[in-house]
Length: 398
Image 1 (tube, rainbow, N blue to C red):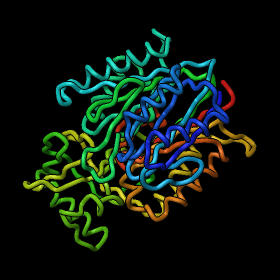
Image 2: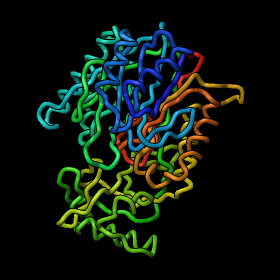
Image 3: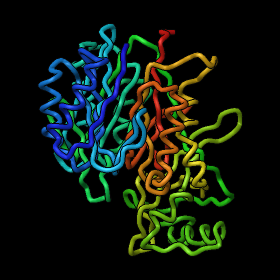
Image 4: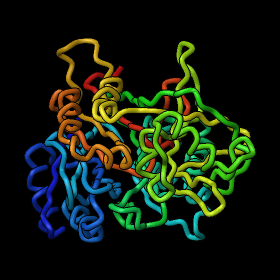
């Protein structure tokens, strides 16, 4: 297996792809799979068509990233497109993107169809993939994960990120070899010839406040402990920070103080999937980027700016699972929350440097997304916010 990345910030998407292909050809001759991350300013039709002409036998999955991205070359700010290319003649790979035809009410059906198509495109029908890369547009990530598990019958490791744009204006997208959509999902299935390892984490901790969810409406938490959810959250925020939270800026102010739901425990220590408040509704509810069900207990979580800076490197290190200093991975993929990125944007070069050091210079690509999907250590698949998801490819098979 070989992995290489290349990027271009050229304003012309056609020129950008030409430069990327020229760079990739130094390492990759006939890629099996291309993972493409790009910002909203790029022309994804041109990118898809140009890559398809240059690599007609490669499977492609593309996803939009918020305001930039990271590769082993560092943090790239603003308009850009990056391609993560994998060449593995002994493995097999397939991708598929499908549109939600009826809003998102048919998400489960479309997810299963996309999964089946991706497996067919890999020429491994009837075999469980070892890894799934998932990129969907915002809105029904939990339904998508549930549908994948239902179709496969088991929990296959997933690394995923929800398509993002620059300013929450709906300019996100996903694409494959043949299609692009701003309302759908993309799936890539992996049957690699080498060993893979994963990590999914946040680094946030509980701070002593919890409540039962007593009323929800879609992704709006209307009541906590039978009180308006925003009132409860304001009290928690004031108590922990000694500051007031303002409705119009709750997205930014809550980045270091999200809500968490316990997903499991490791050695008696609980771990959590996080939910990022996005807005306060007129009736005093809190709109979220995840589903939260009535009856669940939510906890106020806390993190720090420095934790957000160092966490990506730590999660990658956890995914690498180093035992010897001379072990170097082939490459990797990472997903980093856009909300975290926006809060520490002035320190992203440090984030990129730590990721580069952890990967020991091996090629990797990292997108900034509006939701993260992954598999916790005990096997649970989850969709959360303010999370980091990563997969690393190793030389050995076992």
